[in-house]
Length: 59
Image (cartoon, rainbow, N blue to C red; front, side, top):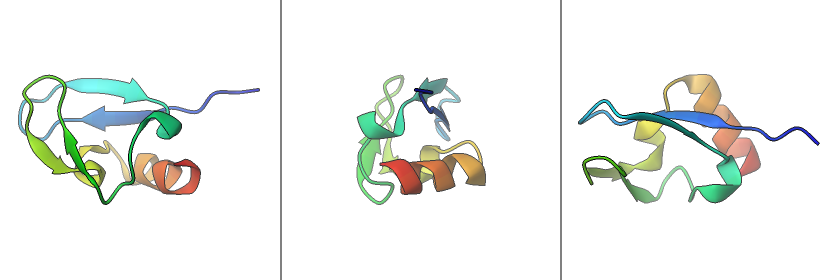
């Protein structure tokens, strides 16, 4: 089984990280950056449209 990851980027502090879609809330829910605690909709943390599409499909 291949594990899928999405890439995230905090718009406020620039922190970059990866996570599995199943470990994240819905793309519409509020999410806090683990680096600076900035709170935004999770969709705003996705690095690319493909990462957002993957999250929507698998989360």
